[in-house]
Amino acid sequence: MKLIAANDHSARVTGKNVIDMANDADPREVSLAGIERVHLSFPRFSDGRAFSQAFLLRRRLGFQGEIRATGDVLVDQLPQMERSGFDVAVLRADQDLAVARRVLAAYPGYGVGKYQGDAVDAHPHFVSAISA
Image (tube, rainbow, N blue to C red; front, side):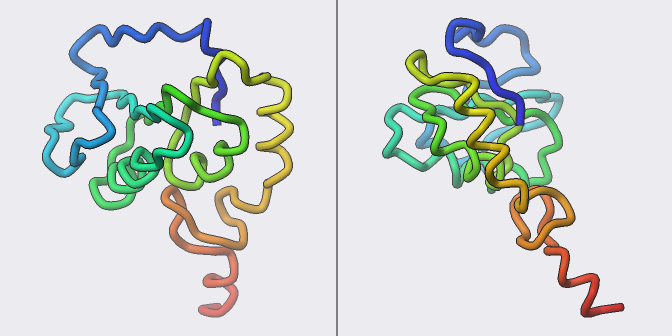
């Protein structure tokens, strides 16, 4: 997962290949034709609707572009964001990039081909061992 400091991210969405999706929007009702990047907002750290939106985009709709978390993004949310299908997280201004990298490194077992399935790779490692 790519991490971006708040001051390195432009809040303005420009171009027709990027959409800023409100956290109460249903991704199934949005046209994704030609869209390369979707910004999903966390207005408060306790509002997790963007997790569901990312999962829907990635797993149900097969969106292959970038899904970016914006807003009130805290480092302790990063492992779940990665598992939900986010590619990029724009950290809240008071969050430290070094700490965020350590948090992500502390959970290496969630990656592709590991022990649990997620929004990006639905098949856990042990499924291939059983079917072999």
